[in-house]
Every structure is written in structure tokens, then in C-alpha cells.
Image 1: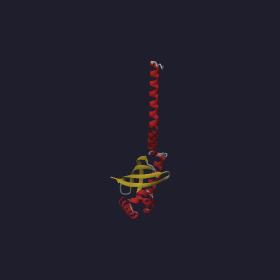
Image 2: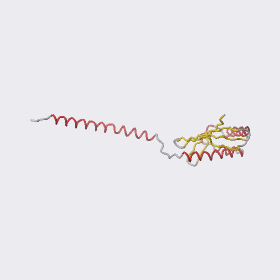
Image 3: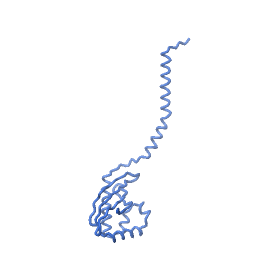
Image 4: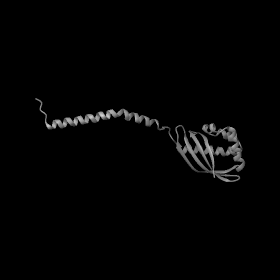
Length: 161
């Protein structure tokens, strides 16, 4: 005859609970793995160097001002980001730049007031605000640039009233 003591029953029950907990962990392991995989695919692993990206954007803005002074609208258009070129024709862009140049004149000086960099999937978006003195007036300009390494393009340009 089989004789069970109270301690044997308690020990057996504890062992059953431990096995159940293990089976729950094993049961949810694939789900946890899938969630981790999905979340990791949403995160960009591209290294971000904001200071370098902002410095690259500053160089593009300097080039923008130089080309505007030279009235080299063809090269100004090439300085824009591919996405920006897709939304505005070359002729329309050049006409707007001619109007701006005619209304406010040449760039005399410019200094950056603020810059903010945000990581995107393939590039860093840099928003920069400049205080720029032109021949006829002083204005604030806002540039949004897409920077990928040493390459940058102007996504948008806005004169802030």
C-alpha cells in the first residue's frame, strides 16, 4: 500500500506549480520574441551626429546665400532636396527666387539663431533659423534641410515675418 505524508503532498504540489510556471514562460516565449522583432524593425540603427549634420546644413545655407547673390538660380535649384524638386517645377522655383532677390537685394550678412536636428529613416532633418541682413531689409529665414552624411538638400525655405 502507498503511504503519502502531508509533506510529500505539499512538495508534489509545489513541483506542479513550478512546472506550470515554466510551461507558461515557454508558451509566451515565441510571442515575446515576435514583439521584440517587430519593435526592433521600427527603430533606426543609423548613427546620428547632430553637430556634424547642423554644420553641413550651415554650409548649404552659406552656399544658398552666395548663389542667390550671384543670381545663379540654376545652381540654387540643384541645391534643393529631391523631394522638394518633385513638388515644384524648376521654372516656378527660379521665378520665386528672382522675385525674392529683386525685392530684398543681396545678402550682406547672416547668422544662425537656432537649429534643431531630428533623425529620420534615411537622413537627418535639420530645421535652422537665420537672421539675415539683405541690402533692402533684415529678415528671419527658416530652412529645413535633409542631411545624409556630407550631402544635404534644402527641403523648404521660408521667410518669417
